[in-house]
Image (cartoon, rainbow, N blue to C red; front, side, top):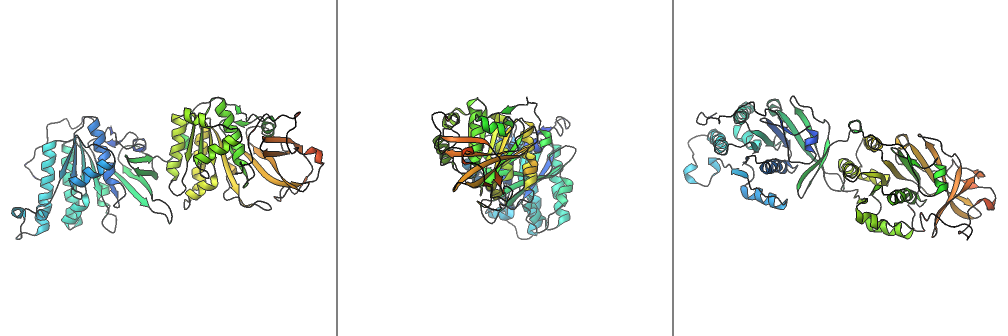
Length: 523
């Protein structure tokens, strides 16, 4: 290290290793407060993984707090960095950008040489110029982009390690919090940097066979500081990175008052022993067209009318279609949507990660105080999470989190097939507190619908089978039917009396008090 530069006279222990905000949404939660002050952090990842953006967000956050920031760039020009900031809608006012060009690469003929080996002079001059910039600016936050250039100039692992150690020591003497970016340009991961860095973050990008690329990060190490281990998904959009911390349900528990929510259809609530209990996960399964979504919307609409906030995560329908279908059966959700009581998130299975999905749910629960969450459907969720080996584990963590917040969670799952033996794409009955099964059955030469509750952990429920109907007058639930044959085969056949079945339409003596669904409500 050059002896020409004396470190500023600062107290080296002031705020030593205290958390420094990262400027990246979600990352502070993973790092339990942020980066460690006055320490060097290694951020590594392949080109395009988001390292430069993460570094710029760190400096911009510092500028907003009055901290001097310095971006030393060897790999990108100042013009390119300003262009990146502009596309994200950022201003780099208060951030010093130092474009470091080694003399050998300069177009100034006076700085070029030919008698001394290029790598020897370039490396020494590069490090000297970087130290001079630090001395001049005296920054509190530094981003060094990137170490790959130092690696190439060093032409050897021992020399490379020594130069990085020299930089790290000088940063520490100047009480700077530093991010050193590395693009993993070598074939094998260079673990030399891991041993000399206070913390190591790795950014990864995975491109599936279809759909948008998925990004994730994990903290490999962070000395003397607790952090959330494992992989955490993140998105790189306009405005920068947003990280979705891996959901650990055990870390989130909120006291709530137990109780049940009703659908407004007395017969339906009777089958479920009074309704759906708060803090439970409820699974509605059945073939396509049996009325699963309509059943879920019945409980959601009733909650909204009581003034409770709700969230719908729709994989199968657009927001417009969902609103029109709901309105056609008597559920006018648009006013609740406009007031902010209801949030409808249209999920694109090709463009959503497990972390982003869980993040949207957490936002609705924390910010909007959502009390009812409907996921329609799990089939779409599984399509979005294709290739994820731990799908059921992720769903278990998410439903447990919602249960501990006192939320009523309704999962809609379509089974393969219309009649006969039906296959369930994934078994989530064990994470569900209540399971409602819908089936078609035949009676009097007509196809009808039947509803039954297979289990309910939190209380008693009917073990009977009831007919229910979806028509222009809404949803009606009939009396318990006992004359069934072949229920477990998937083709229940009713052999009772015609008088036990629901009429084709309500009569004047049988008013329709609960228009829960309509002819377009097949789900």
